[in-house]
Image 1 (tube, one colour):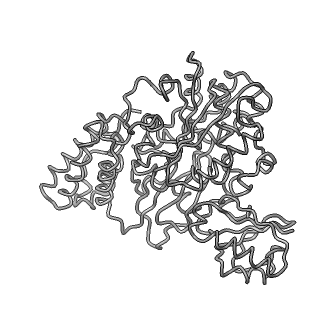
Image 2 (cartoon, one colour; image 1 turned 120 degrees about the horizontal axis):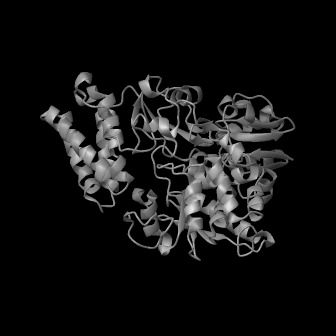
Image 3 (spheres, helix red, strand yellow; image 1 turned 60 degrees about the horizontal axis):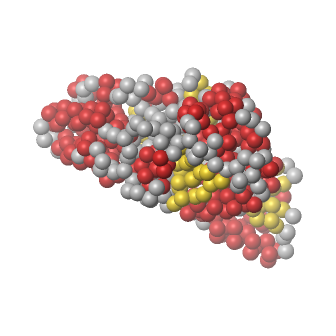
Length: 525
């Protein structure tokens, strides 16, 4: 029997993967071919979706992008034995885009049947949880601290330190909350992980529960991810029946269970305290800190809040040891980050690499340059609150501290590329407008500042007292940076100031008159 893998990832479904799978099933039946269809996750080579793989004695052979109309011709060519075809890319693992990655967190994504417990276990699954069940909570926390894992979101706070804080509290009820409200532009790694390897997240959350003494968790998933929600709910049910969740995990006498909650549909819900308010059934307003969620979080109890990639990285740290994970990366940025390539790029997709490579490598060695064929001009890294980086900064190592040094951030690892037709003044205006729309409204600098920011930028673009308006814009950004209650208002100036400083000509300014560097306006890290 030939096994054929067709992704059921959202990106693949969007370009016809379901129709391709049906066409394969129909064609195989018509030809009397013995075929087993496996609906896997995406490998992350999005320009090749639908990427279909055929299992052969020599390994899995990749064909793509496959459309339903291509299926009869693929059967005629003998693809069930891995034969050559115009859509054939050879062994999947040898495709340079994939071969040149360091896949730790995403090692199983696109490889396994996402809901098969046997597949998951055969590829190293539950080894970390088995080990954690034999360890004291403090030892689990120490392992995560030693790994150097930091939050794979905006703040990059050390994961182990957050866990240690929750462990040290004396409360009898604690919670693990997964922030899966992935709302940044150009990001999709959370979705890919949840759809392609949901047990990795479940295992990571169970380990977190054992580490801090929490017996229950919530995965807060954005409502726009129906396939991820379905995959998680199915996986949780199967894991519970197999004894990997519940009051007595694998007969250990230690328990942890969890559930999925559909998000409220607002960007601000990605901020951890706003997320907690939403989970409690309230309007998603940002909380003042202190108290920190680690001390007084969900329902007033000590709470670990990490995002999907942070939690899904924990199983490999426990199974292979802190040193194994820590050996990847540079400086204080340890391990790997799944970078998501989007925008005007020929080869968009997901690239998991150790910290320390450059943006230029991602854009050209993996992304293949612009899709339009025109020169790339700017790249926004870190979502809609990230800085716009000019070519002069594309060789800075992708490292948390290095990016702070240039008034930028890595955030969730998303990047959106623009060619030389982009109007950076318009992009700056969009950044302010985005903040105005998505603000929870609780603090004045964000609620009012973003509205005024759009007005000021439009006056600059129309040359209405341009120099005075530029000075006013900088003052406004300084107020938002220093006075906003959370990162939405506090980081909106990053894209605005970076556009103003690096692309002054788009604002009608001479480079020499562009003013002070954005670094002078950045908050102290």
